Length: 125
Image 1: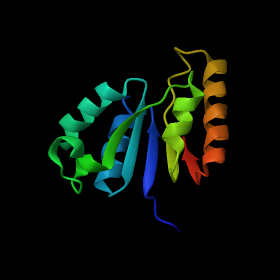
Image 2: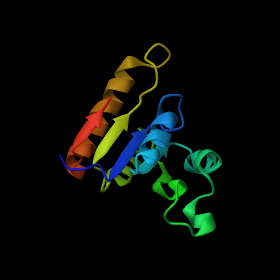
Image 3: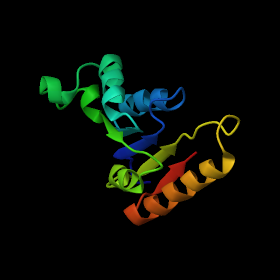
Image 4: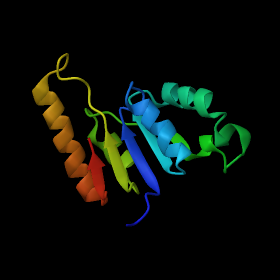
């Protein structure tokens, strides 16, 4: 099995996604943490994992392996950019109990289509 070098966590600012970011980083995986507000998410990552590599120049520490990326289901280009060079996607979607189910299915289909184009090996829901 080929090791995972880079993972994209969709919904990384959420209750399920954020712990996934931390676990992946602890396992030595480079993580793209996706959210609509990347700056706010990067602040949260830096607080949890230590100052970012950009701030400290440390390119070997845990924070160097987690970078927030802006990605929005309403902006396919932002998703496409986040998926470039990713081995695996951990997909955390909002609850269908409070969001329109058809929109969530459309978002998942879009992620699948863009991930296939980008050569992503697998998507974990």
